[in-house]
Length: 284
Image (cartoon, rainbow, N blue to C red; front, side, top):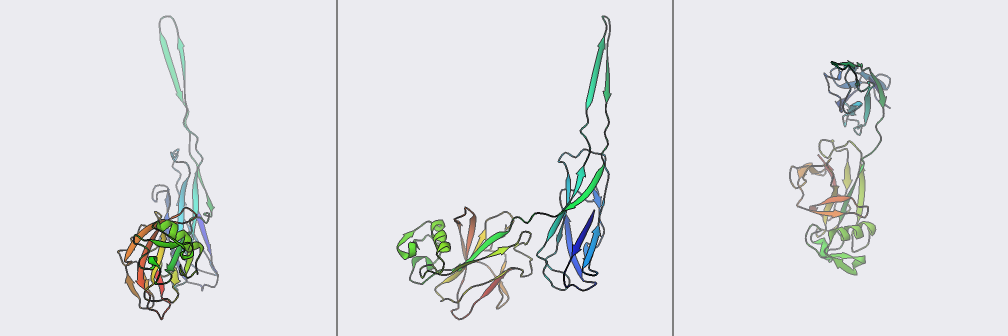
């Protein structure tokens, strides 16, 4: 199974590390080589693994070998953790048994024959579909005169309908804020996409977002998709950093809401604004 990496603008000898995963088992279904990295030559490189012929009918069907690039190469260029998946195709047939019986008036004999099968594994490499990109919201909460600017992660009430009504349902309030970003009662709501395969932690500041200037009475928030790929609790663990000072920090509080598309989010409250800067945050 041969994986080929094509690049743009890299120098000969540049290194792009990667990791292998998938349903196939190293040492049982295939062997690989070390180190696990591409060495670029003429903006291209290949990496080969050897699959094993095992003569077994696999219970789960075809097996996969997934190659995922590291977030950065050895020169600090971002790869966005691109990945590709190869398949070890199970071409065996299920084992079948046939039994024939003959009998006379005095004795009965049974003859059983069993067919044998063999498995031949071939490989083919396919590109994984670009799925699972996640939408993150980041916001600060309107004017200091509105109830929910005190704490969106609190009990409310929260203004809706341009300040002409209120609700204690955070999902209703957030859907209203997202749909009416920029209204004086809502503040600014923006968003960014984190690509599939990029994790919250250890991504080397691949994802950054910048808050607009505001007053000290208007805290910052980050709304993180509530998915299994993001188990980190931003209330602990120092997963957030303000790039202005480089200090990791934790969120102050958290609440749950559902956006208009039916996606569940964890809304984390960060520090209040300084009033004279546009702070840029990242996950670390």
